[in-house]
Length: 379
Image (cartoon, rainbow, N blue to C red; front, side):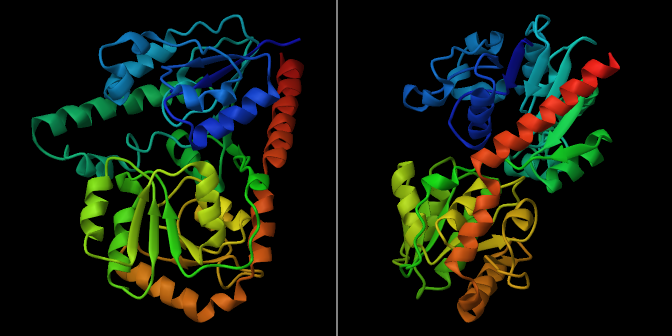
């Protein structure tokens, strides 16, 4: 029986990457779990099934619980200190450094990549601008640190035997960044948790972490110019004060902050449409909305192009806009209201079912077994 190690970047919140990890833990219940650090709140640890992850020295550095990201320059060193020499199969699921664990020729390393490090590669300039690090001495130090991180990331990629991407979009990013091919296995979405509802209320919904790349500010700015259309904003994060300022004095825009997942599912089910302005690697929220029978109005780049069917498709499930601007969102909402009758809730639900947890487990387990057999045969 082969020994399996699962390697995650960091455990701080139960979000999209952790939903993938949850299914990996279900597929490999005897596996040991490793991470850079583990600061998951007690009320979000249930998916770990009582496991205590093995962590690195980052866990014990000053202020790491609140400022773990500030230790990113040390994380390559930290992840390389994890001793996985006793395992036959190593499965990492990185968006940062998890794939950098050291493995030997007797070990198969399969890496399920959420994305190559966006801030170190193609989105470096955007991240530096948004962090205020695009100029000055701090900016120069940040650019140098990212340069070194890119060098390490290429070394880390060379140690992976099999790349798996969470979307065709990320497979292209892997090819561009690492010059490696990746098979696509879409991440799991718990479609069964979302109740289908054909009848809708007269409001639009957006829900995400309030961070810059989600572009919730653009959605709020757009609806501020459409006072006859109601918008609910669900989520919390560092951009909250900015969003509150943009929504101030706009009675048609309501900020709900963080809401429990059950309540969010209800809001999704009753929404006229779900609005999504980010360029995501995959994007679970639009699939969850469609599981409820709710159409999606989305930025037409990234993973949304693979999870939403535009008005020109057979059995459409949403409307795309082609620029991250309030004007483009306004135009897309208008098009949805003119042509949205061609979108049927039943079609949205059927489309979402393509991304179920059962489908993920079957596809990923089949891929790993195939690669393990090939690895053993070639040994």
